[in-house]
Length: 429
Image 1 (tube, one colour):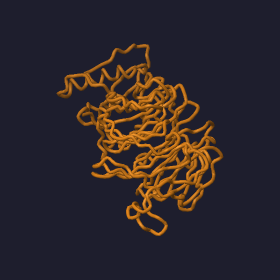
Image 2 (cartoon, helix red, strand yellow):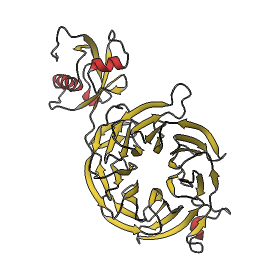
Image 3 (tube, one colour):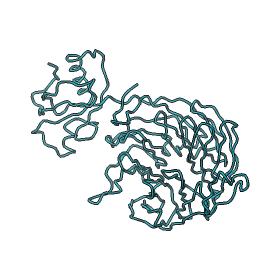
Image 4 (tube, helix red, strand yellow):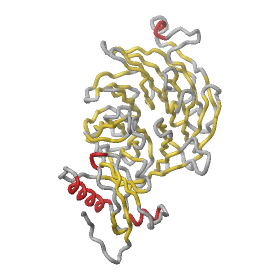
């Protein structure tokens, strides 16, 4: 039987090891350990049990969940923090530790990279020199796109197929432009210029059925625009030749924020969530045109993202923290977790699209970080490489993470793990 060195003067506690990764299952009978045990010692214990009871003979690195949160201290500190009892058997779930994402490419630009979006193998970037760029996931520069007259602050893909793609860019020149890219010919059309904001744009988001975009700006307004349908219902594609670059007006303008809108995300077919420098997030009904409810903070919000998997919001803030909100909570605080590790303003956050627990963040401390919602005290990994502020990040392709910064680069990290979407359990390659 595997054992740990136990000091007789140390308080004992009964634990039981559990895992959802069946290939690593060990007997689930209770074991007695000292409460001062730390994750590295638990890892040794599980590996000894694996070697005794399975064919696995090499050490595997595990993380340990105790009371639904990763153990990052001694077990006794964790138990005290959770105000839990040591009288009952404590279940400890173990999962294989995520391998670190590996740096892949550094995409060099002529100015700050302030916007990035990924769709399949294509990376779209926007810069402070007013230009857009398209790259392959292998790091090859494919296209440079002039058109805006001020820095690009946000980009989003709308659609992509074999031969064509559509995307939108939002700029401090007070416009959003909808672009149509012929991939085969590598040529671009400016389909529509969305005019209506009175100050520079900061955020853009595309709805779920790819029919609408929402923009937010320094004029504090939230505006909704049609992507494909004009007022008479005629599709954009039929009118491209005769109305190339036609100015588009918003379908709806919504007032409510008192300062700049910094982030936008559609949370369902008609619901939009925005963040603002005015210390609030607002949940909007895009059809009724009003605020459904408000989430108040104590500092300016710089970005938000919503996960349909866990139905929660992560918000980046000027106080260096990231907060997890449940927008549907009706009892107690809406802030469910605070994530602390960045040492400067957090500028950008993005959820994994396939794992309900994972998200990334980028900050003015030059770092991007990979987080697990079950480990609020420390990120899984610091993804270093930028030499200046991280201004944007994206994880729309689960296979790689991308960040852009004030060092004129876009960094591309390859994820060393795949996710089983049906079970939301991470499995290594």
